[in-house]
Image 1 (tube, rainbow, N blue to C red):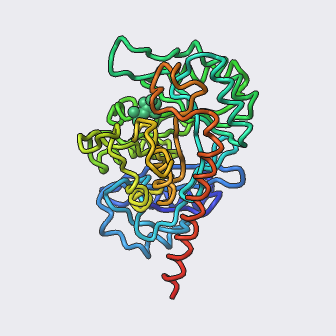
Image 2: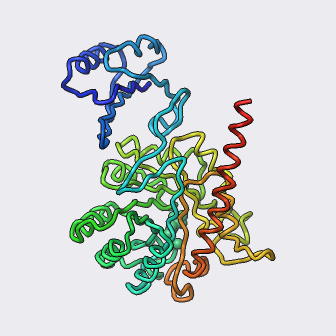
Image 3: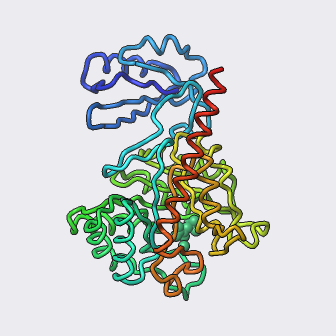
Amino acid sequence: MILILIPDAHADSPDYKQLMAHLATLPGISTRVHTEAGVEQLLTEVYLIGDTKALPIEDMQNLPCVERVVRISEEYRVLGRHKNDNRSTHFDYNGVRFGQDTLNVFAGLCAVDTQEHVEMMMKALQDQGLNCTRIGAYKPRTSPYSFQGHGKACLPYVFDLAGKYGIKVIAMEITHESHVDEIREALDQAGDPTGVMLQIGTRNTQNFELLKIVGRQQDFPVLIKRGFGITLDESLNAAEYLASEGNRKVVFGLRGMKNNASDPHRNFVDFAHVPVVKRLTRMPVCIDPSHSVGARTCSPDGILDIMQATAQGVIAGANMILVDFHPVPSKALVDGPQALKINELPHFLEDISIARKAYEQRAALANRYLEE
Ligand code: PEP
Ligand code: MN
C-alpha cells in the first residue's frame, strides 16, 4: 500500500510525526519513505510493507497528511501501474521531459571511434533541432578480440562537443559500476556541459549488483534494455530493482529478442510490447530499431527495415527511439552494417513524425469511442 502525502509534508511537521507514530503501531507493517524534491514542491510517498490487506483504505485516507491511498499489487511495486493509480508517468532531466506521452529521438553513434566522427554526428543532430544522442564508450562485445570502446579516454571530448552542439542528454551504456564514477568525474571536469542517461544493456539486464548500484544513485536517469532471452516479467522486475533502490527515473527499452525465428533480422522485433509495458508500468518506453533489425535492408517500397520497425514502434506509442547513425558506416568500429547514414537523418525524422501523428490520431479516436 502506498500513502501519497499532501505536497510539502515535511518530516518535522506535527501532522507528519503523528502519521509516522501511528504507522509504527501497526503490527507486522514496516514503512519506507520516498521523497522527490521538485522545483516547486516536495512530494512524499510512504510505502507500507507487510500484510496490508486488513488495513481499510478509508481509515488510511483519514490519517494526517495523507492525500491519497493506492493499494498495490505484488508486481513492480514502485514502477508498476496499480488500480486507481494516477501517479506521474514522467520525469525531467537536464531540461528534457521523459514520459509516457512524449517522444525523444536519441540518434547517434553506436560507439565512439574518432573525435571527428563524434563532431560530425553532433553537428548533424543540432542542424535537425535534436538535443539528445546515443553514444558508446564502454562496449560489451561478443569476442574478446573486438574493439571494446575507448572508455574514459574519450569522455572529455564527447562531453565538450555535446555542450558545443547543444546536446542535453547522452544515452551511454555502462557495464561496470566504476563507469558511473568515471562519467561523473568527466562531466564534473568539463563543467557539466551535458547530461547522461546511463544505459544498462541487454547483456546486463539481470546483473543485479550493477542494478542495485545504479539504482542507489540519483544523479543520472537510467535506460534499461529488455533482456534478450528472458521473459518480459523478468525484465520489468530488473527495472524495479533500480526503483526499489531509489532511482525512479527509469526508461524501459525494447530491442528485440534473440530467437532463430527473427532471421533475417538480427533479433525478433518486439515493438508490439510498447503498449503492454505502458499498461503494466508507468515507465516511458524506448524502442531500439537498430539492434532489433540489425541491417540496412530495404523492401521494394523503398523503406528501410529499420525505418519500418521504427514506425511500428512509434505508431504504437513509443516514447524514445535509440538508433545508430554514422557519418561513414563502412568505417564504424561497431555495428556499421546497421547504421543509418547521417544524410538519412532528415528522412528518418520526417518518417517518425508521420507515424507519431498517426498514433496521436489513433489515441484521439479511441478516446472518442470510449466517451460514447
Ligand atoms: C547498444 O545499444 O549499443 C547495445 C549494445 O544494445 P543492446 O544492449 O540492446 O544489445
Ligand atoms: Mn551496437
